[in-house]
Length: 111
Length: 115
Image (cartoon, rainbow over all chains, first blue to last red; front, side):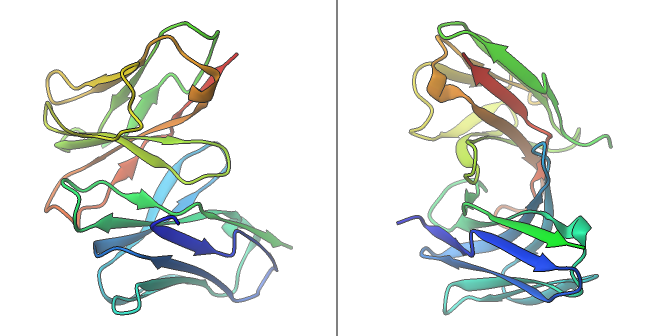
């Protein structure tokens, strides 16, 4: 079993829909990251969370440390949101700051 | 600040050949990471540098793989005697600041295809 599990693996939505991507992890962490990867490989960090909730524009990320669960929400989705969204954690037991990644959720938003 | 850069962006090689990739981190970042990503999967950790010291290596990093960061600035990742299973995107990231809560900035990656 992977230390980081994401669901769903693939998600197709119509423009304007509210989207939720879930991430569960099995280890103690110092932080959780949500990342966006567009075709061609470039990865951009969206959020880093250690507790609570963060919002940036139409994106909202929440984390429940006790339940070892995080969600990424996209409000009023747009075709330009189409990308792979990756959840990554920083396990407490590792040295340095290396990340352990989920497999990603492929989001396609149709006009 | 021009971000993290990687060179080359694409590399096609024949099985058995050696390849070397370069990563230039953001200039003031003292930590540098190499990750590998195969198609449809999330990235996997390979190795990590704090300045010029290689502090951690994944068991994924076989003896055919070697990484250096000789002056604590740019880093190179060399793969000797490449195999088809080495085909992947090789990602570099850099960061600075407190451990555990620093943001990693990723380069565009080097896509390796081994024929």
